[in-house]
Length: 144
Image 1 (cartoon, helix red, strand yellow):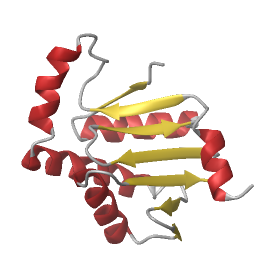
Image 2: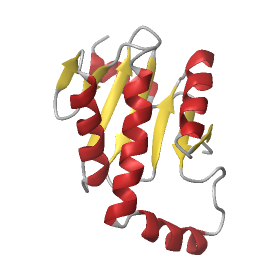
Image 3: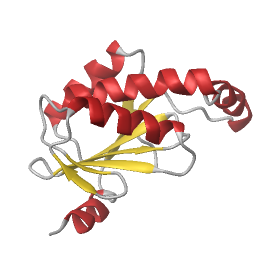
Image 4: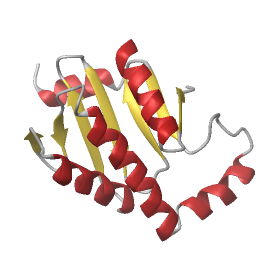
């Protein structure tokens, strides 16, 4: 299976998110005001730094192939951090990290305040949860 096919199949698996909030907000109006605040340039930059820190640290435990306009193998930490930050701070871009060995996918999209993790192993869940908490973020299972 090539990277695109594997990515597509993983999008239909169990998903976790790393988010600015510990639980989904039921009332959209309340969330939209908070979202507007965190999408402001300085706050979004801080969020992008946090997500970049988590992803760079995850490279210690997993080998990822990275998609950001094209596929990359073995992306150096500094370059990967910059790719993540640029993606989050942009309007319409995305970045995928494919862990072929673990059959796991991490996605980051521009102008969003969460990161998605598809089909994570128990070890990845434990590591990501601790890394998210260290950055002041929260990991939880995504709701449909």
